[in-house]
Amino acid sequence: MAEADTELALYNFTFTDQSAYVIFLPYRDGPLDSQWNVSYSQSAQDDWSYSNNLGKGISSHKTTLVGASVELSWTGTGVWIYGTGDRAAYTVQIDFDPAVLGQGDNEGVLFTQTNLTYGPHDLTLTVLNSLISITGVNITVGLGDSGTVLQARNIHGMLTGTTAVNPFFTVDETWSVVDLYANQSASYPCIATYTSGAMLSFTLNATVGFEIYGSDDWYQGLFTVTVTSSGGTSAVASVPNNTIQYSPRSGWTALNQLKYLATGLDNRETYNVQVQNLGNTFNLASVIAYDAVPRRRARNARDYPPSPEIYPQPEALVQPVPPLSKSELSSTLDSTALYSSSADGDLHAPVPIVQNPDVASNMFDRVGSAFYERDGGPLILPPRKASTHRKKCISRQRVDPCLLFLL
Image (cartoon, rainbow, N blue to C red; front, side, top):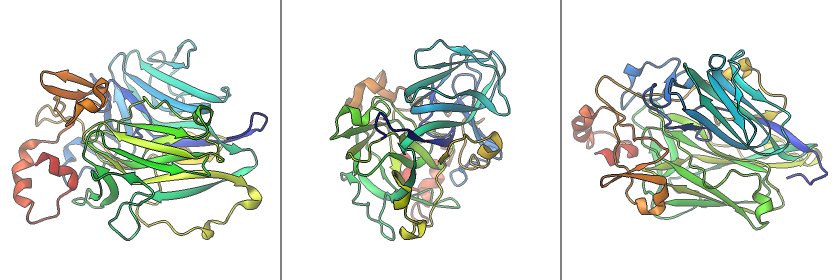
């Protein structure tokens, strides 16, 4: 992080609405009139199946629910919210400033604010009336001192060419390497846990910012991220509050989604990062860590060992300011996920999914003897009519590990 008298190097991070870093309340995916609803430009809801739940095209979160909101916490100087909506159909509040009435979308931009004082900021967009759609977010953040260049390290959850957890990550026996969505056109190797309360940690040095990547799907729940440093509270002043509960839940599966972002770190400090699963399951595919070095020290990309060919391009895009235009953004919003409702029945009925709610009882609601995640939303289950078929097929075909808890 830059010294007080040193100018920061500013960069834009752009990510889709499917990023868990963007919080949708009251729930992330469900009926349009009672929560947010995920849809895809090239995916029909009726096409969803166990072997076909990767959405195609551009994703969007839509709702008509008055009082529904979008929340975002970041450290930087600017923000752009992409989507569509009518004038006076929503309000936007940043920090403790008075909420402003939405002016409607302008070429796909619902709201923009630049030239904020560098520091932590909180944004809340609240729906007042009519349909609101959110398609993506761009934030301007600080990464190192002005005059430096970024160098990225792509740290995969599993050791390349093996089925072992990368020892960079400290995990217990509840974590393992899994090959998700293997019953579809492309599998997704990562590390995952199916135990509520399970933790994963790692340590970073020479880092000005980092991202956590994994997938969204219909069986994940809430998680938290805590960043600490030997440098004390000042070294972590730029990271989001560790009480924020993120949700990667989506009716359809979305690969390579930004699950967490921390910027403005001091590359002279050591950081410990702890991720806690609060729901049914959580997965991590990779961590991308950034360092900022003087231009004379910058190494050519060919000096770094090649990354595996599996999903080398994460969904978030980082680049120096100025911000992306809507046309430039659209090329980064093409892929990933949907499924929200069906004529086959109410797939949003609450389902008890917490095995050990005592881990963080303040994050769950009790209904009778069952516990439900407070902000993650009810677990979205596909039609159960396929259950018998799945059981019969276990001995004859490869089973997605994430389906096992339903069998």
